[in-house]
View 1 (tube, rainbow, N blue to C red):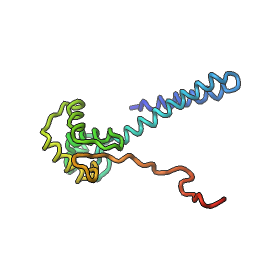
View 2 (cartoon, rainbow, N blue to C red):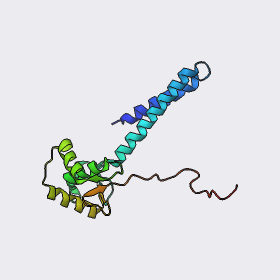
View 3 (cartoon, rainbow, N blue to C red):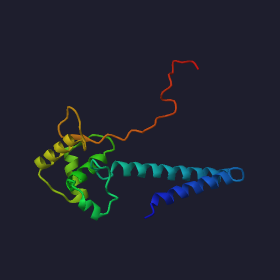
View 4 (tube, one colour):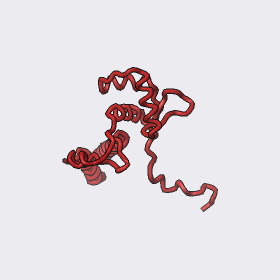
Length: 166
């Protein structure tokens, strides 16, 4: 199944190409094409980041979402709780920010029409934090977060010492 982002990436490449072709003859058009390409590329980055943050929970075997149901049925895995997945998605949608218990309860209802007692949700969140699915914010009760993904590679000059004159 083709990914729609591939189409967006191709369109951004086309805008870049059109901008390069029009840079001498029509600078305003080239500037417009460049800004559209940048907007599309920013969209791709944002969607890929959202996909990464909201991906399904993995087991110790890695992500098994690509396996057919017949293979998954043969594995000796504990089932991932659907409510845990929903609550993790809600906390992850905070994009690294702290999310309290009340917003989680509200979003569970708004997104999934799930209504559970407050104590049940608190216990579930506590167990999720113990498993490492989410993080409890130190010093604050009922506040959780999923840390933002850190880039694997930093800027090219992250390791340079600014005191060295050359």
